[in-house]
Image 1 (cartoon, rainbow, N blue to C red):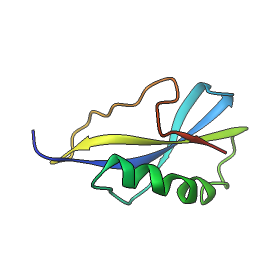
Image 2: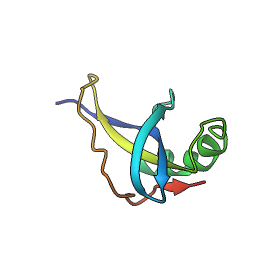
Image 3: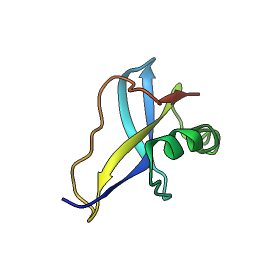
Length: 83
């Protein structure tokens, strides 16, 4: 398991924070959770073309080399932003 990085996943939610589905992953990789969280407002604002009542931006930890697993959770984690 190598060093990690963070990506921003955009979640589309049908009912508040319930029933959220990942609908996009932003291409930028961040070296720290703090940098990822700082970038979420702009990335969320850039995702307004997605057709959901509410959107959530979530920083997800990834492992280099790229792995199929993420730490996505059904509830909004610390650092998640809503539109």
